[in-house]
Length: 302
Image 1 (tube, rainbow, N blue to C red):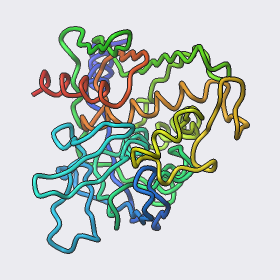
Image 2: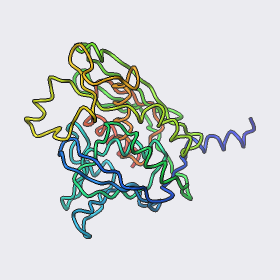
Image 3: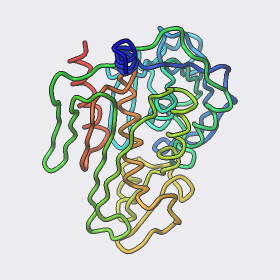
């Protein structure tokens, strides 16, 4: 390989091709996992410098946009919630953000008429369908991606997540539900297709991560409902297991729970605007730890 070709290849790793939508997608409607409220979402193109942002159309024409950024995070209890100083919020954004990030979409206006993004079937597959229907339009400039200068990590007890400097992004997730035979201990690794952060990236994401559904333990459900959570959850929107079996299978993948946790991690890291050039490994983590690591990455990059 000539030095010029090697330099071009290195530059391609340092800068990621980015997209917006080629057209507005048809509305996607459903019920929010925690609020139980119906909402309709429409994805629209946006200018490159606008990034991904949400607009609550039910709050009127003066409702402020909610940036899909680490600085906008207001809550991480069982999902990720974003908001503005003016009080506009949007909850459970992670599956939609994962779909946009997985497709290389770095700019998108997300309009919704409720406080929470619909859970749909508990996966990101319906959002992939919406992105495909709208099509992708390449942005005029590639976006730089940050490579951490040193390992960055967050830990709480036996749970942890770490970002190690690398030439390209990759995600690995481990979970441990040893007391629940249907899940047990699982690991899953995934890396985006950076050869073309568009249709190729979307194809890989659609195959490997998007169909993986959220999951829950049967013995936790009533307690969560008593706290006013999972009001919109159902057997059609989440996998549920007891200690012996899945109550509403079959699974789409043998390690579907670990794949779904990887999907959640991708959606939370999308708050950085682009995946960092890092090998990110998580073990028994969750949204709070994902976002804490994203904050560390953002602070170092800034």
